[in-house]
Image 1 (tube, protein in one colour):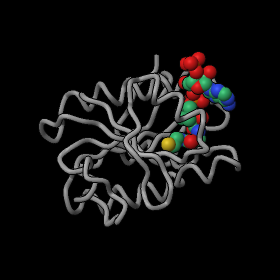
Image 2 (cartoon, protein in one colour):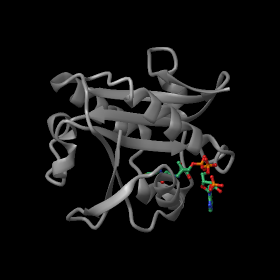
Image 3 (tube, helix red, strand yellow):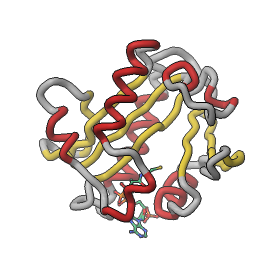
Image 4 (cartoon, helix red, strand yellow):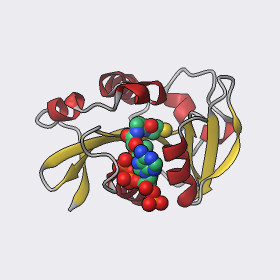
Amino acid sequence: MVHLKELNKYNVWDIMELSTEEEQERFIASNVWSLVHAYVGNKTSGAVYPFGIYDDDTPVGFLMLAYDYGEVCDDKNAPEISKGNYFLWRLMIDKEYQGKGYGREAVRLGLDFIRTFPHGKADYCWICYDRENTVARKLYLSFGFEEIGEDAEGDIDAVMKL
Ligand SMILES: CC(C)(COP(=O)(O)OP(=O)(O)OC[C@H]1O[C@@H](n2cnc3c(N)ncnc32)[C@H](O)[C@@H]1OP(=O)(O)O)[C@@H](O)C(=O)NCCC(=O)NCCS
């Protein structure tokens, strides 16, 4: 069964070992970098949620969610919608486990978690992805995300009502 497990001192090492195909590296930061963002973000706001994605006991991917991204990260590209809303910040499935339905299940579980409003009520969840990332784009749009524009780097912002 696919489930999310918060990162802790036991499982963090397994999750940091996971990686994408080399040609996908332009689409996402490494898990180690994501954890740096999580650490700094949680120092300021406590609103970053890094998870391992598991199939039973097997680690297959990494998902990171956040609330009010502008507060957790000094990113000049943060869109207006990030204020007071949830962000599906990072999602990756290890190259060995891609194409088996884990990405879809992780988005579903991530949205379920967000809808528990762990950092307070919000109206929207948003995401940001490279316009050439056709697999991720199709996946997100199938959940009902709607594209609202692009940031200064040409990445697409998309949003869905919670
Ligand atoms: C994007 C990503 C998370 C998808 O995870 P995944 O487990 O491989 O995806 P799933 O198996 O759940 O498939 C989801 C959909 O994508 C399709 N898909 C998956 N891999 C595909 C591929 N290589 N080519 C075409 N379609 C693909 C599946 O057919 C499925 O579509 P459907 O549900 O309509 O049948 C994964 O490819 C990944 O980690 N990519 C690198 C990191 C990345 O780009 N992250 C997103 C950053 S915004």
